[in-house]
Length: 124
Image (cartoon, rainbow, N blue to C red):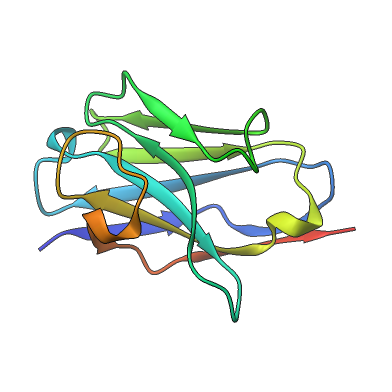
């Protein structure tokens, strides 16, 4: 089965940067779109970004546009989330996910494999 392992979370001051990574195994990584979501306690999981299987197309949520970038390296079976100019409201558990198909995917319902999550805390 698919395994997704996130890394790179932590505590950072407002204005700082972090890069999250997500290593995938279990099926042909380059055939599936990937996504990043985040969640805070008591709230629904929120879309952050998605990237197509080839990596040629991507989409970022308006709330983080201009600050976050999603990318992937299919040779390394890894997807990344570069987070710059972090704000306290970016504090959440961040999850990577693998979609059922190859195209951009915004809804959690079209993802069938999820990582365990990594905590990002931004202090003011």
